[in-house]
Image (cartoon, rainbow, N blue to C red; front, top):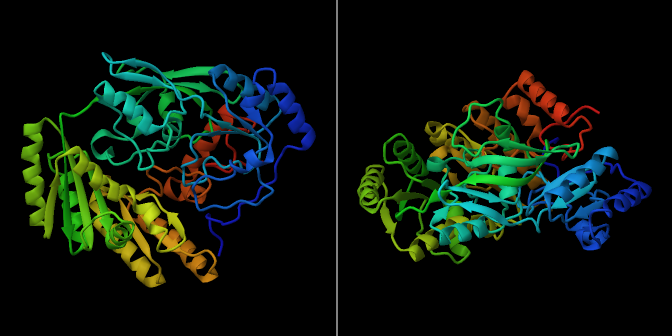
Length: 480
């Protein structure tokens, strides 16, 4: 069966040895020997991200670059543009949509050494950073000053800020604080011709011209390369409480989430785990109760206000047939509860060796119906689907479990993906809420938006990147 998720992606590299040699000679004018590499072993390390996509051994990046300054990136892209060489920005490679995979060869820009906090403006609540800084490392620095950056993904221990901006990442606290597009104020961007521009403003609001910042957030490296990012930051809340409620029926848990999100309780996170996710995490060594489903609700703010809202959440849980309600109050208790949620993906590998992690989302009120679809798909195909995610904003991650050594299971897994996405679109949803289109979801873009809308996206891409060198084959397939 034809699918947009193939276990073998194979494109033809556009660079021959002579072209690679000339490119290396030209970039050595502004990069030292330890800032770029043509070594085969190092190039192999950059073939994949964490997506379920494999590539043929012939598909490799031609050059790996580790820049330290914006000027180096600019000079590098200028040479790549002149020679029509693909440019692939890469953070930690933690994406699951194939967004940083160099499927047409070219030069991978690894931002490992551009990870500095350039300025922390406590009065204006802003932070200027380089794209390679890891989310948790930034929040560790901010915490010392009494601040935090709310929208971080579950992979925050490795995910970089540049990657989060490129994919408009969300994470647990999106329900209250929004995704990365709500926190990026300015971007320094290297354009496909190597020129550097600044988008956005340092002010909290601006009606000046087209909003180029919003255009670049979520563009997955297809329109330019971020070299500096100005972020809003937020004071640490005085009080955080985490409530967990267990249920015999996941629809009851969903209904509770819908009621919470339509109330004035304003949770900062509402997460859900189904029975398969719970059992996997339990087997992984994390203490969780045995039940059909768990709802995790985080509240933050002033202590007296949080305690009042907490009682309302407890009552709402019991009204929706919760069996047990527990509250984490200390930092250790809260971290332990989040550990269970963060452990799901590695825990599921113990059940089946291969996982396709979907990233679907629907309007919150449609979440119960989406769960019904997921259950039916799992039963009809006789395949395990472990579902968890940010139910407070309708964003679920159904993980399809299978063994790619078994052709029948591969067939079922591909079919499950198709059915999940079709069900999501039928419920006014999106095929990706925070992971991006990348390689995996391109054919669904037109199904979600329409032919004219995708044509406009193509026109934007061609206007900014007429040579199609910026992360080619991602989001859109431009005609040659």
